[in-house]
Structure formats: C-alpha cells, structure tokens
Image 1 (tube, helix red, strand yellow):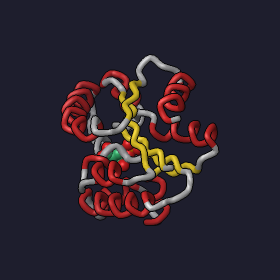
Image 2: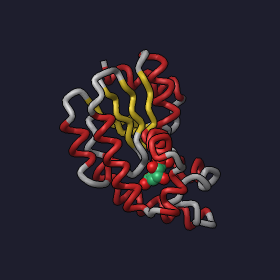
Image 3: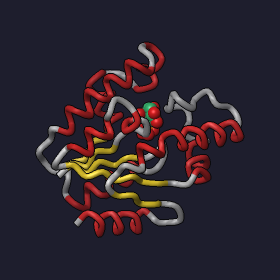
Image 4: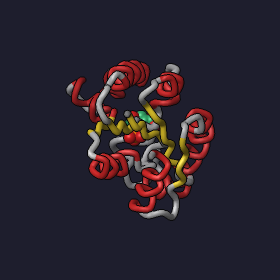
Length: 173
Ligand code: S3P
C-alpha cells in the first residue's frame, strides 16, 4: 500500500510521514527530496533557473513514477502536487494508494511558515506577516478543492504528533 500525505506547505506531511513510516515499518519518500535527488539540484534552484512550469512537469513525472511502487510506502507530496496536471485524479485512481489530507488552520500555517520561507520559492519574497497571511488565505482557498478530494481528512490543529499518528493508524487499518 502507498499512503499519500497531502496538505499545504508546513502542514506536517514530512514530519508526520517519517514518524508513521517508522511505526508501520514502511519506506518513506518525500517527493521534494526525491525530485532534488533525481535532478541533482534544489527546488529553489529549479524555480530560479527553469521556472515553475518546468518544476510542475517534473513533479508530475516523479509522482507517477512513485505511484507505480508496489511495496509499502509513505509518500509525502509537495503542497502544490495535488493541484496540477490531474495529479489528484491520478492518486485517487491508483488502486494500491490511499490519500490523506493533513488539514491545518491558516493561523497554524502562518506561524510555521513565517520562519520557514527561505527554502519555499512561492513565499520566499513575501516580507510582512500580513502579506503572508493574505497570500496563504487566498492560496489555501484555491487549493482546498483539490485537498478535500482526499479519501481521509485529518485536522491537526491543537493535536500532538502522537495524537495525529494514532488517529491516522485508526483510520487506515
Ligand atoms: C510547493 C510546496 C513545496 C515545494 C515547492 C512548491 C507548493 O513543498 O513542492 O516549493 O506549491 O505548495 P512543501 O509543501 O513540502 O513545502
């Protein structure tokens, strides 16, 4: 089975994915890390030198590649992955995959992202917290239609990592 974790930037996909993988004895892959490894560069550099459209093509290509996995895998996507190129449909149509949306409130995302902008090209240029809040609010509103198609939705606000993992395991098995 492939457990696909989706959600906005800083929603905890990689952190929780790693913990879940250890607990379930699954392999763990973060799609952004996989792209960086395969392309031999950073996501920021891809955006800078080749542009977002090129990044989205590669993202779709490697997503499809990983969805062919037959072994036990936790796959954490990038925040935008489900929102481009029919990727959400592809995930939903993959028989051995289950999708989980890690849903976090805008206030949670703002407080995490204001300190983690640098390696995220979509928000790296945003200077004030007000502008960041406005950007995230609009962006999340546009993306929610994709995230909400996930088979399981878990709200993460006010929960500890172990609460969320326990809830995930209960929903999955
Ligand atoms: C993106 C999210 C990033 C990364 C890229 C674009 C997005 O991943 O894929 O910077 O469009 O939301 P994280 O969600 O891991 O930050």
